[in-house]
Length: 309
Length: 243
Image 1 (tube, chains in turn brown, purple):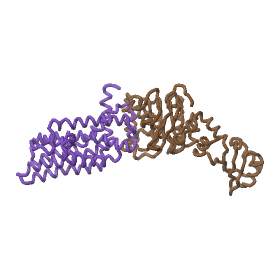
Image 2 (tube, one colour):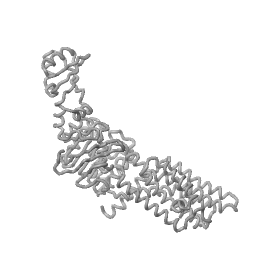
Image 3 (cartoon, helix red, strand yellow):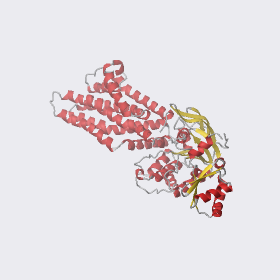
Image 4 (cartoon, rainbow over the protein chains, first blue to last red):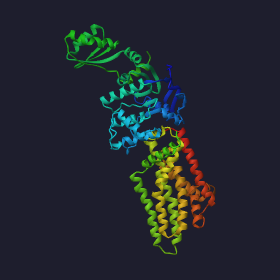
């Protein structure tokens, strides 16, 4: 377990089950200021964990402390929290200013409208849009949720899959926003099931799978751990047999299976393979059309992290 | 929180919840039920003069207090927190620095705000048209208002706590209020239906209904039930699982 200085969130031996289904199992961790990504495949327990962290659900066992206090039955604590839940439903008849302004009013902000307008502009939406929220696209709704979460300038921001539905430009903007909030000393917890997304947060991560904490630490450490495992890659080429032979002779792959227009290789050192594959192709005088990991999906990463090594 | 923040927050919550429960389908469907009271009032007015007082009382007692107000209150009140809990938007009200009792009270107030024009006012109009006189109108207003507040409070809590609150609410109205309380004197003493009818009958100078309670009991019980329901709803908001 990592102990974080200036702990915002303290979780101890947290378990949550629904009947006989164990959603969270004996989680213990601390989270401090900066961006922390909660990474896990769909159904891993991320949303349940978020609900418990924010006091929306009771832990079956264990404790959660936010700024040293129990989030359950403590409405005053919510002044310091912003949450963007995963579900899409909003107050559908409201305009964006009404909806974000409602959050500002319920937070007792001195100038709710100005705060709402500021938050809406930060997420790059149009405060003058008079359409009801029911007319908004998925990406816009995600940003509406983000706007209502940041309207009170919270010290702790909990965002459940906030990048889902955003286009690449919007994703970039959102990631920049999370990083800037983290740099400003806020605690930002972002859940995701997309590995590349999390890498771009440049953050500490908690890996959760089947309700258990599979790994935690800086992303680079998790990445290194993952890079150490044998990897399967797809290598596209115009002459698969020639390239397969070249790769095997060079020793950067341990096996190669030739297919029509591509080969599947296994390597024990993915970074070394990536560094040398272009040169080997050049030496073999073949054309390289693609290099793609076949097992970068989270399930295989988790299988590795959780499996015997 | 400033002193002005409390009423302002309660108003905000009330306004959100009224907007959330007033849907076209509900208002039209239940409005027709309310219009039924006016239509019955007209029918009574056109009926034989000798039967008119009994028929007018029947309109208030057998239609208004037995069916119209409980059902309309069930439909709106169970939706006040229940719909938000079901679609996950309750979090946008719950995860704010707002005392939970204010949320519970705002839900009851929102329901009362809608039930009064959809059910109680048409019932009063029906009672007036029927020719029952000021005494009947006053009795209808008192009994109807007690029923509106008490049922709203009970069904707000029910909507938050259980799925399929409409089915549970209807079962409660049919089995407990309309069956058990009619035949069991013990059950009648804690029945909202018997209480509100008893108060209305006393004020209208009608003979007490079967299993009637004293009018003071009938006045106090719905208020106690409403208060208890708000406490339970607040407790659920504090301790329950919020969608």
